[in-house]
Length: 149
Image (tube, rainbow, N blue to C red; front, side, top):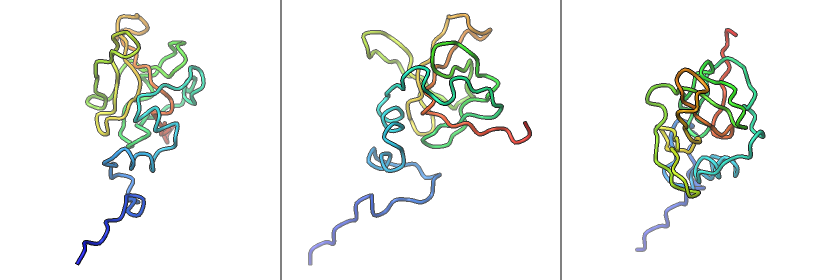
């Protein structure tokens, strides 16, 4: 007797948002095309177009792909680079990876929980006392406003 065909992912989509997709196809189902391009293919949104470039709302920024907490809003600052900038992440929330694309050496930042691309980190620019700038795509994050604000 032949084995029955296994259902494809589209027939067994998890409704539990806390469960992480295991394949890129599963991520495609969960994310919009633009979110997938940036978060899973290390793309970049155009400067000055992201929803959080000028946001000053108190709260916590989460990974848009998996919901992990990444940045408290009090670490956000105006760098005038066209993307949201933070001078520190929640400890252990972000991992750094050497990026030699585009003919230069940079440090990519990814969500430590789901390995999604957030942006790049730059040091030595003098913007803040911590001398660090996490340059993050707005499409990679989601702000949870503080409820007591």
